[in-house]
Image: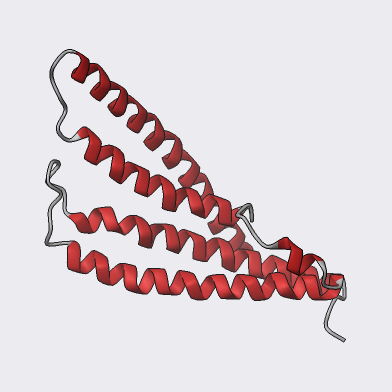
Length: 164
């Protein structure tokens, strides 16, 4: 399963690079909009661009959090379990996440298909492209979670931690 680890690492690097570039561009565009408004002009597309960029930043950024298991969690419940069950609970949580990501991808694809015929008001971009952020982010999160499951199972087996 080394290929899964490499795929997860590459997707994470791509996500981090994308996040940095997108955040920088969004900052410049919003700053330019402020300057233009001060001189009495306006960039009609800037708010829409910033909004859609923020949506992409949210879903792609969430995948980075999944990769590093840095999302908020309820540790109080898992923390009271014996160590053997804690490792099993981590795997079960990852499996539940996979179900959620499947639902996001499945219905996200339907939304992308439906909205491909709509255009954004200011930029005239197909809305399906904007909604694809959900599908892309969920796909990245799926790969990272699969990788986490593999490593968690290996950890459980290596330590000999199994439910007795």
